[in-house]
Length: 253
Image (cartoon, rainbow, N blue to C red; front, side, top):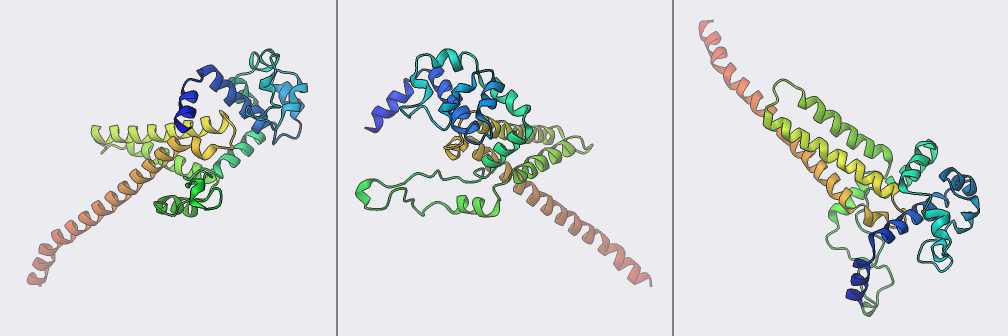
């Protein structure tokens, strides 16, 4: 059963996958949280009558995608560019969607079960192994856009300041460029997953983002440890250098 499903999905035309994502981000996300779905659709450049499909996804028998005329009524007129333009002109709605997405930004395990029916466990039961890091992230890092802004902003500001310091070598600057680029890629990945599809299955969509954030945090921790070790060595070096001077002053007195 599973190989057949995987094979069918791999043979799905790329255009159909894009249509599914576009349908979901509008009808299964944007319009669900909208105070006026008709006005939102008209802002996208299509008829407000399509609001009757709000809350549906492409896997439902009553979704708009099942109607032949829907291609001309929606897909021929709307793209992800229009979705981005909509949120840029509706900042409060954009911030609302960012907050909704960020609430799942540090959850590593999707809400899916780990066992088959023969196990006798309730549906969606999950194993307790190998979840130390995922549990720590979920508890220590609040699911808030401010948490993401602090991580990204702090990383980008620190890497920029260190890059332009006079003592930085060419090798250090290359590493700082890579670190800054990594954080920019994480931002792009987060926004792509937030706006490019419904947030229903966001945890799975954010896997690449999670990998980048984890790597960024690891680099930051290693850098802080290195700074601490370097400071301790310099302090010890100064103490050792001061000992002969202190001994000379004591003997002269």
